[in-house]
Amino acid sequence: MHRTTALPISIAALLRACSTAACAMAAPTPHIPPPRELLRPLAVPYRLLLGPGPSNLSPRVRAAGSQQIVGHMHPEVLQVMEEIKAGIQYAFQTRNRITLAVSGTGHCAMEAALINLLESSDTVLVGNNGIWGERAADVARRLGAKVHELLKPPGEYFTLRDIQEGLAQHKPSVLFLTHGESSTGVRQPLEGLGELCHRHGCLLLVDAVASLGGVPILMDQQGIDVLYTGSQKVLSAPPGISPISFSERAREKMQRRKTRPPSFYLDMSCLASYWGCDGEPRMYHHTGPVSSIFCLREALAGLAELAARLPTVTTVRVPEGYNWKEITAFLMDKHSIEISGGLGPTAGKVLRIGLMGHNATQDNVDRLLQALRDALQHCQHSRL
Ligand code: PMP
Image (cartoon, rainbow, N blue to C red; front, side):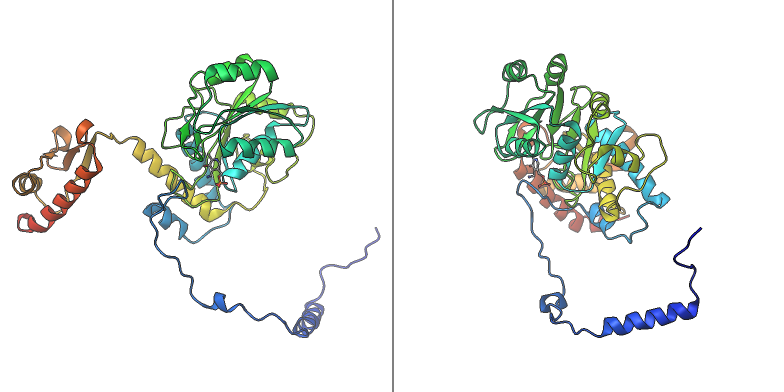
């Protein structure tokens, strides 16, 4: 066999090569000095983010983001990815195998959905009642698909009849709708839509970037074929990693493709393999954003815990060293506020706060918090 390079080279040769390279590298003088602004410390002010996203990070998500990283394919990260998949399945209420998080923001998930579902031979019907329908139509046109827009004035949503007419007229293979239209503040009802689409041989693709976690959404029961969301809204994680899930119907459509998806980075078969969704050994596809993965895991854990909470009656652990009776009596005597102690298995352990109906107001929450602060200061003597 003809060999052009003899490997390995000797250490002496390596040292010679390195010193030559070092001389070569030392020769040119950089013309651009280090930017002065980078030599100052990073300054990030605290802001209460009450816009349509991003929202502030929860403390547990911040803690996850400041963890040291490990290799993105180390077993510990793969385990966290498994937990994320389970968390997304829970958040989306789906048992879909292809459930994962794409490395990018909500737009990335939108592109991942359209790039994998559509070929140039496909017709897509896009519900356009705000900016997100416009964006989806733009992406689909770039893919060369036939795009029809179902238009509604901003502020309105699509009825089952609107959609039925659109499906009958255009015979699309995919319908795109935005669940929470953040440009207009409108929620698109989803009841009956999956069934309607499937009767017309069409897949239902739903953008839930601004709604998931805040408004109930039941992917399997509602017959949604592709659902995605972002990390920076209700999940309160940093932007840059986006949960997405594909139904069996959607998976079959992707398998029937005649052409490969025009993006390597967003090719769902590669991503499904990387995320261990296909039962095969995982394949390296890209370097997973390890810190974002940790943050998303904690955000989904927060959602899982929250979902088990009753919004009408809040139970708060009695602070250590305090007597619950003193606290409730203090609130009643000094603030004329009734709250209760625990009951049955929680007797002596929790305070129970009801915020129901007419009483469920911000003012009452503020008043109670103020009174509790006062109680914690004045019930010191009752500390055990
Ligand atoms: N869809 C909806 C409904 C949104 O509100 C947003 C973000 N405002 C997006 C998609 C795009 O998400 P991102 O900015 O994370 O790319």
